[in-house]
Image (cartoon, rainbow, N blue to C red; front, side):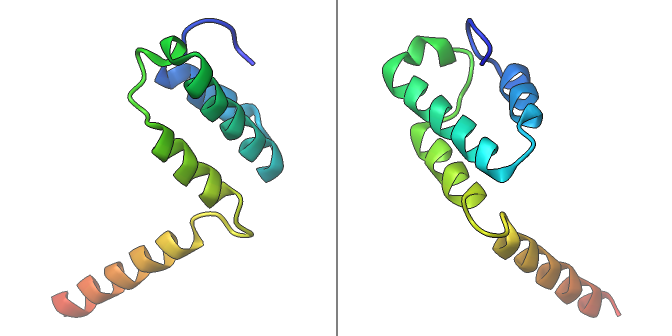
Length: 84
């Protein structure tokens, strides 16, 4: 884990280094715990504990973001039908 104050770029870069879903979930859980114990590390980052919880829940699924992707696809298809 990176040391110091977290910003958006640091979080994204470190998250990208996690190559498996399990590692991504572990990383998010660690960040959530740090947000609880050392909130000053996140003073330049506007992410809430609830948002960390939502990300953890999503990445812990068998297929992350599957529901959201399906809803976007249905929305795009409905827009196409409306244009025709």
